[in-house]
Image 1 (cartoon, rainbow, N blue to C red):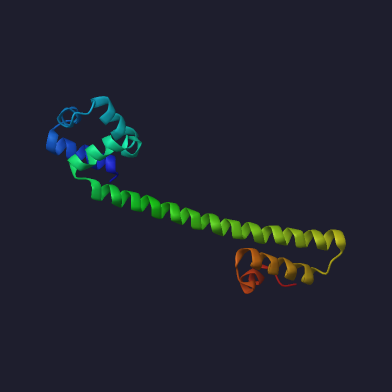
Image 2: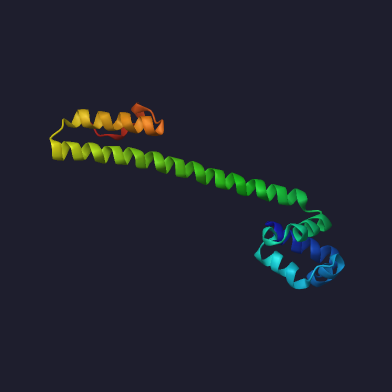
Length: 135
């Protein structure tokens, strides 16, 4: 359950309505409903603090923030993997160009491409070699 849904649930349980809760904490109703609709993170720090303190939701807010951070971390790892694959692709395309344009020995060209990609990405030479078909 996202934080705003949990806040609405607690408000309904303890204060019967969002309007009643807004009056109780001295916050304009429109400010509170905007924060619950668009996200508590969009509220001013003072208003977010007031809502989270009153509803005792700080632990839930911290947990949600932690979960969001972990998701972003996984996405970053995926981006790093894509960059590694892109570096390998770029090096292999360069090797192919050397083979077709400059009549370079394919084995040597691909070996150089793999070594360069390994330097750029930290991927093992064997892992790259396994991707290249044997002729």
